[in-house]
Length: 296
Image (cartoon, rainbow, N blue to C red; front, side, top):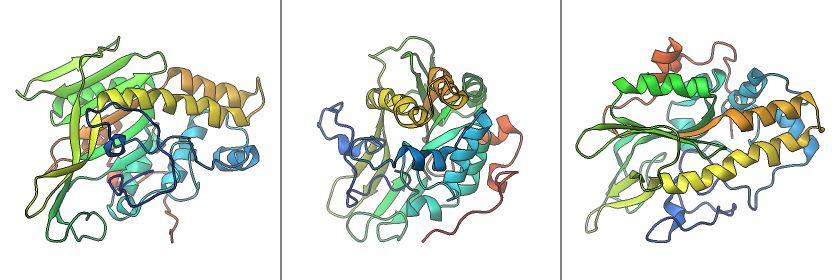
């Protein structure tokens, strides 16, 4: 599920069940509704038709993700659709660029600074309020792409990043409450937990409501399932010892699962760091596929 992840009125999918929060309410964790549980994935033939009959290069996989963003692939193992908020927010072009260059996005939301609660795309809660969002990206990427991103983030102190691989290794960078930049590489440090509100609202007669958070401990738990989907949902549609199956298994073994949050919800641009490392303007769109399918 992409985009309007704070909308609890949408049903259908069962969520990954865990209890990482003191409140015990996993529904307000940003990525808690991506689980494979209860989801219709399609037959093996349908999945091969969506994700490639015989992909042989990583670029073939990049193309599947890019075409999903553009509306030409109906769903991915981790997400079934793009939400209306994402479609209307102007971030489809930069998302397509990220996927073209190997930052394989599975979740995103744009920043919002004080939109009316009645707003058609971003609004929620009682009338007369104002809602806010921090920009968020969740994706898979290669070790080299992660290295480039972490290096570039040194000049973007408002952005936090956390990443896990299939071996349980962790890499993260964040700014603490004292304005100090911190970095962790290598083994996971379970006591080093980060929790951040990424969606909240202000309404008359009530406390500030924050229905969506990012929690590093919850993300680590989700990451284990997300990484396994490369094998259980995607690689499994190809014959044993085939080139395509080996390709997906290689991605599973080597790629990182990453989230980024831009804490500057007033003027921040989460895509600016990618323009620096890719030496292009993400808002100009992909250099290969220039059309976006019109969705109902």
